[in-house]
Image (cartoon, rainbow, N blue to C red; front, side, top):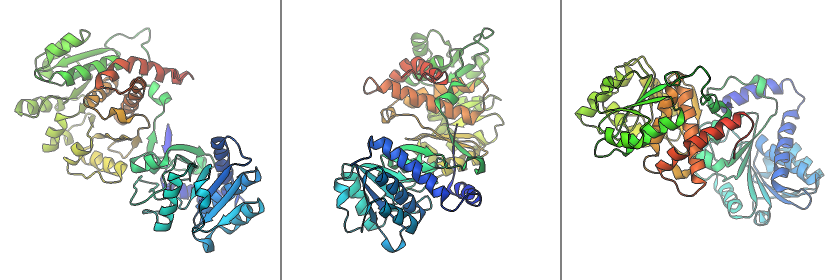
Length: 484
């Protein structure tokens, strides 16, 4: 599990470490790690053209010292100083000693020929978009041939939230120090950060335990253990599905199929799309009666394609009145937003799975801080909130959050959310903690999207068809074989 640390948490850990290490040692660790990643990206040092965009303060110092390392290995390094009078003095001296060139913001010709561009304009404390001169240089860097590498965080990106309030540096890679910051993996910040490389500078023992995390394949594999010798269809988790309608059975078929393919224990379907589900999935136990007539289950999924009329509201109320974990999705979210007390008064785990428009029906604006918004709604309703998006956010009522690291833009198509609900219901029926379980479901869903898109554009049914393969790949990652 990868912890995501806020700026305040990183600063507090740095203060402890700075008091215990020689002056400048921490910056040297960061600069050495940064230079090492740059060398790996370049594939060579001698003759490589590197341009560093250098602001005031320690972030600029990191870039200057890294430039000195690269110049010492034979790279042709130019530092463009955005504020020459406030550039980091020791870093600037080191670059000059190593043979690096120094230029002002009016002399950035190296950007058009650079093999690599370092963004050392703003650090993790920066707020708001880039100023016009810096924005102009960032734009030239983006249109040039060089690999854009951000130092700690892309300038113009809020390190805590991922918010971008104006122009920001569009990095292809970000080398971050000590801990991954939330803004690198969520919201607009994720797109600006590119591939994130973490450099260990010794902060680990001094960091507070994070309240936000990213799961890895290895973490998710723990939710997908194959059956043991003592298992049977009941011990593997029994999930009930209430979805679809006689006129629109697709949501029910997709949701039921996803549950079966994720953890094939036992899936019970109850609803008005019974004929379609029975024809598609003979492995499911199907009834066209009420949820209470379906038989014993250990978790429910309710909502995809079931409608929002009085009958649908009655079914939702019946499911939420149980003492079982419930996934509330799609049409059920619309109904729950009208009557949030249906969720608030529950003592059993509830997982809501809204996209942005569904989320805001509960009276909470998503805004630029997606983690903060999900936490607010989760605390208000006493439920787990899975806020769908390019980087799906999961938040529990206690404030614990997860940011999903998998997925593809190909998942922005009809029916893929029904598949996610089926995956989540199957995992939730095993009795594992609901917030982490929701994060595991989002991770597996994203991986399935990546696997399915290997063969071209995908539709939701492709996710279901490739789920078994995806589960195998994720399990293989735990054994040290990604299966890729």
